[in-house]
Length: 101
Image (cartoon, rainbow, N blue to C red; front, side, top):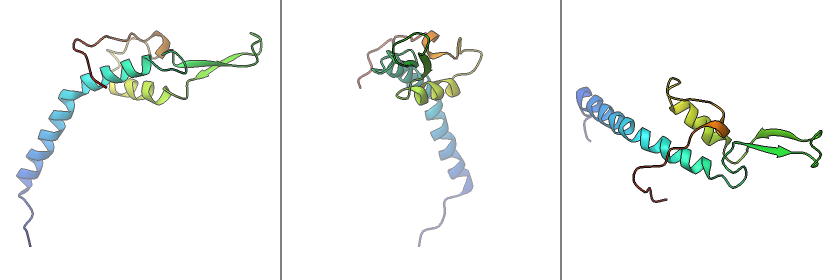
């Protein structure tokens, strides 16, 4: 039967893992922006037009394919850094290095 590790060790491990996540977060948000901006359903705009083709009957609604991604980006980006919460207007930054998908 093994004993539980000391509380200090558990805290050190948790802090170390949290720091690793915080270091990786900007790269992950950048990759999410790039992925959402390439959405096949809305073209990265975050909205799709539904209707019968008549402009009077058409309406925009959030894109079902990338809406959750844009919401996650918004939650992960501090408000003072996030220029516009509308995905269609959000700038997509190109990564400095190529990111393999």
